[in-house]
Image (cartoon, one colour):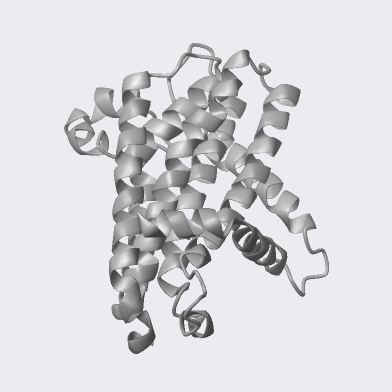
Length: 268
């Protein structure tokens, strides 16, 4: 597929745009990159108090689950959802906001959505590192199962890239897509098991699991908690589904971008 070939052949240019996006996130602020660390720490403190202390939430995954376990679990889930929902939010305007690159015949515009996703992955990586440090310092420590984390998170990356290409291409022709993606971001926030586990759903509202189980993000988030917080084995059937679903979305997104690209210049 030509889109994937173009990305591979313009790796250095992609890297330059990724760095540009990362640096521009806090351009003009007094504390700059400090906010990349401060924001996740403030969020983790807030989640610990609100969801753990005030609401007393629990996932019910293990016996003796603590307030801090729940807070870390919510934080992990939100880190994943923030990557995906932010991708949905910014992608429709990626090509629209940079028409000069579209009108340059030789410029590989497929790297623009990819660079945007890359900067969001960078932010998520910082959150993940802070969470791992927190689990080591205040939780039960880490097990060798954390080595699975890249394998667990890869489907989210593939899914985000596929959706970025799809929405960036569609957004050129349908300007209302940006409004729809804001709503979809909220839907995925509550449908991806950020604040609950699949066992909670099966116990209290099994009729909803019929629909929720098709969401690949819920399996990614549950697997991430299992290997990070409790050192448990991965459910490979669930994670395998997430991998398969994400690969299909990636290929569909690449195909859509490639098919619609010839009309970008005229639409802009």
